[in-house]
Image (cartoon, rainbow, N blue to C red; front, side, top):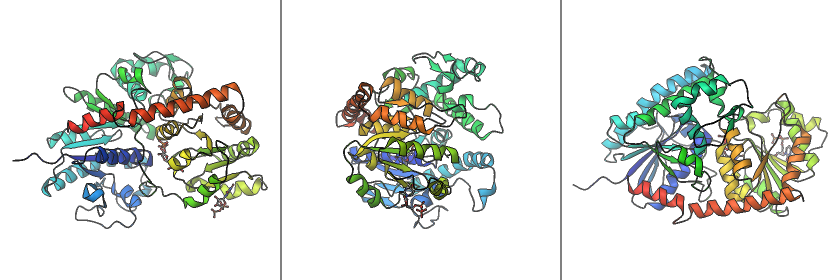
Length: 470
Ligand code: UDP
Ligand code: UDP
């Protein structure tokens, strides 16, 4: 009997910042391994937003859209969510997500086996700690796809292996320096926020903490070593990758889109002709691009300060203000009495396209890991405005390790003031020596990550080794 065809089931948590890198990895695997099949699976709700025209199937899910000659199939898993569940607390939703999601994924594995397309490897993202156990029950090996930097994985690993009390003890002292094996000393305030924010079990952030704890325990149970693909490259994170030697770690990134991916997320871009034409008319490296990702919400006074600072910088800018935040935009613009002159405000854009545009010279970012990787790969220097989760650590890497950006300071109320926006943008785009150095480093790192991901580069070789072993 011949061996079954290699078939990866890629499972991801239903957020834009998780779906994008997971789908990019799926497409990358298909590109390097002509024999492999991939089934891509997130929740029915997120799937429905990715494919608004999808129809229900007998699995209770949506129609599995297909790409790449049938080698890539989309099949959502049920997480038990019913219409009308929006009224439940986020906490209740997360609890039922984990229980029902595990059942939903088991159903998918069985359905694919019954269809003669058995899964040979499960690849799951970080908020699905139960995926490895579901796979193991079915005799299928699994790998975690870590979509944050290796440094953050190292911190979580150390936290749950002997360093929890040292961190918890100094939780309220943001400038206290923590020493963790293999990492440079980190300020408490820069650690992943789920470790220090809340110890109150009724707080929603606490559920992220317990999910990460479960994930690390899952990795510990794998024998001989858990396989972890990391969306980073060897060159970017030498020390941190060594610090997670407890796992079989394969840096395979940055995993970026190979072509247009505007239709494949859960948030749809507005017509990009408008802002792309606007960008085309601008000189090289003259435009500031501003985005705070798919989740960050912005208080009204913060939005005011940001737009004012951008205007005062005197440089053209393109600023993403998502629809859910934009309720106040018309109001802000009206109150500014037409002072918004130099910029374009969009609800959502094709960020990789914008960052690759030669007119863009600076990215004001919340430092979500995808945004950081996309900026480094495009050679665009950053102004870092981290908010939560891993973003402060990511900003440290940008500023201290690769020196491709600087960190904006917020005031005592946590607000980024207009003057600081202007100062930071000038410091990255102006004529000073420091600005020239940041731009030079950004160019250097663009070259390094391009080499890592090209054929024969470090990340490409790691991905090939993973695919060959499946
Ligand atoms: N993004 C986009 N258009 C926008 C803003 C963001 O395509 O207008 C994409 C961005 O390219 C990235 C993702 O959304 O891939 C955001 O992920 P990230 O990890 O940076 O932040 P998160 O949204 O998870 O906080
Ligand atoms: N717009 C802009 N700069 C601003 C505010 C709006 O370029 O400061 C653009 C925006 O991208 C949109 C148009 O003007 O294309 C109208 O925006 P508005 O928010 O006023 O109305 P809406 O788009 O919600 O109908």
